[in-house]
Image (cartoon, rainbow, N blue to C red):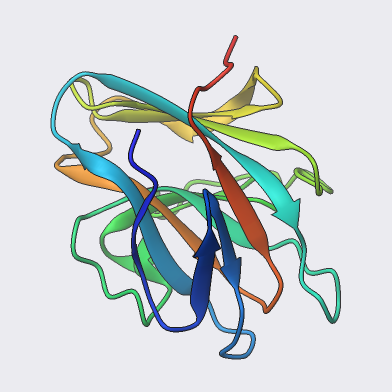
Length: 167
């Protein structure tokens, strides 16, 4: 699996770890892996670090359209489908769907699993290898897409894992 393929000037990589290093508390987009057009694809990200100043855990993990602006965030409004890591709610493509936030959905050290089924247009999420009750149902996502994240605060980091361990 290729590592981080697109990131902006407020992000840095060290191996497979992506870290927001500057830019204030504004979401910034990054992409990883190949363009996904068909089949089922899985990957995991380790929640490596929360924000330096305030331990903020709000990041977004999922998929987005290839070519989204890496110097901006908020792509869930158009072009990305995400799980918000601090509370476990979905963002993008499900306007008007009521969700129940999960307190402390992910904390440092947790693995965030992603399963994208391009053939049916669904996206499912996992916590430490176990399926969560949240996801985008079949028909929600149309490709092509790439693995994508948005980090919010300086110091936040995610590490891309080469093999997913999803149950």
